[in-house]
Image (cartoon, rainbow, N blue to C red):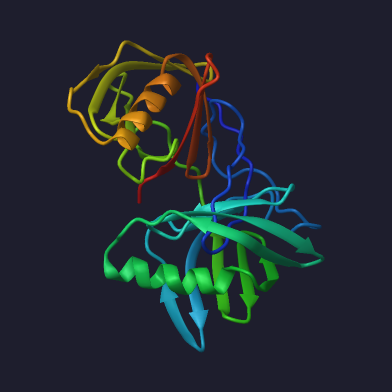
Length: 255
């Protein structure tokens, strides 16, 4: 039976940090919000951002997480981001932010700019109310609410590491016991059995196109991470796979 233990991470603007959760689990939203370090101990969806009296609604899948050791990660709705979270009492600052650079339609990109400006490199006051949190800084207020974790099966997982520039993705199918998707260049199909916190992936069948070197490198790295029994863990919308040969893969749930 799949077990899920999740750890929450806080994210800010253009930031992406590895989320840490228990291996092979899919139990949503347990845990309590940290008192000394607000926002830790839960997973947060970005509902909206209010700037100068105007509220900007969030696109699907914008979210934040923050760990006790100061790692932050999330999604603006299109691009993923990570940053370093520094706590000072009830305030938090998200610095050293980095993000992916995929092109999305105009509305999500406009929201991403608003969210990044509100979250990054500014002191944010925290107003924690059970399952809701407001983060207020010089560039607006970000409204958050607790959200459940994505499910391993049935979710389209966009590979973020090794870097695939949004090209690689995987989907696990419960009924067919398969994993399908794109490796960066070629498409893949393989048997995938999920049991006791592990995924056993069979010999993959792939198409045989040749692409630029960077995509082929990503493809080989993804295949290494899928080889043999693979431990998995899910934290909110982030999936981490670790194979017995030490190769690893990280992915985020598609909106």
